[in-house]
Amino acid sequence: MFIRKIFQKDQYRFTIEWTDGKISDYRLSDLQRQCTCAQCRDEKTGQPLVNPDSIDDRVQAVRIVNVGRYALRIDFTKGCSKGIYSFSLLRTLV
Amino acid sequence: MKFVLGIAAGKGGVGKSSLTVNLAWCLKKMGRSVGIMDADVYGPSIRKMLPEDTLPFNREEKIIPAEKKGIKSISMAYFLKEEEQAVIVRAPIANGIIKQFFHSVEWGNLDCLLIDFPPGTGDIQLTLMQEGSLSGGIVITTPQEVALQDVSKAIALFHQMQVPVLGLVENMSYFQDPLSERRYYPLGKGGGLRLCHKEGIPFLGEIPLDENISRCCDEGISLLDGPQENKSIQAFEAIAKDIWEQLVSFEKLEGNYLKKIHLLWK
Image (cartoon, rainbow over all chains, first blue to last red):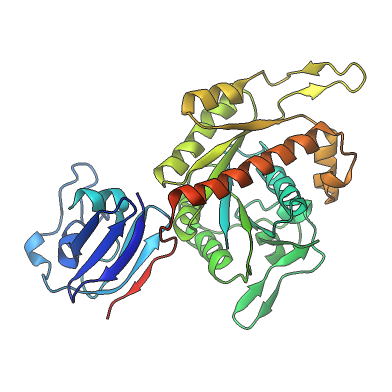
């Protein structure tokens, strides 16, 4: 599955139109809570290592770029920006 | 850049670089504009096989790649003092070099950029997959079991990164006695084809053990300039034609998806 369109919806959310026609909205703070990097998630159990409440609901992005043809990387205005958000993960979140 | 193609193998020494260079010659003969990125930072061999007519140079912030008869190339070999000098750097430096190859080199409007991967499935391979939006990957192996086992890992790497595998090339498949025309299979027969059946990927063809291939690579000349009845030329040309058709049809099938995403927040 690939991305046909991506655009900013409002201050805190963006929208993806997938190649199968599905349209999904993502809130940046929700994605930061899903960060899969080694500091935010236990490698073995997959459990989050960061308290979800510590993530600001009003976190915004600086930019969103693709990683190869399988994922997105989001530069957040604060908090962890190390995560790689694979298309398959993004599809399971909505 | 229209297409970016990765050429990978599990092992070293199975013929990635010679396949890359010969595919470049074939694609050029088909009228395509081609470039080669030698991503084997620690063991670059493209420069030897494709000695430049013009050296790479800096223009403002960009690197203009080397060129040989219209084929553009960049390789770590251009940044060494001597040909034999070893590249001894840690992974972050090597990854930085790869990123520069993608972003600082002025590739121009190429039909196809061929990336000669380093052997294995490590850090640099991941960087290549993440920095470049690969249109497809091809894997190359020799027929013996120990090489086949490792090439499966390269196939898995492409699959995991959602890069379509255009197929497998079997190198050093057979030796044909020029007098009797009898074929010998010193490394075993049919291993590549069996693996393709198992993995469900296309078999692109077999390349014979042929002194002309190694001689042309060592001398830095094009195999295609030799006698056209050579089986190796026919094999490489058939592979080039096959992958080109696949790349074009993939593009049509996948439709208009975004290859490059750069959304700046307002």
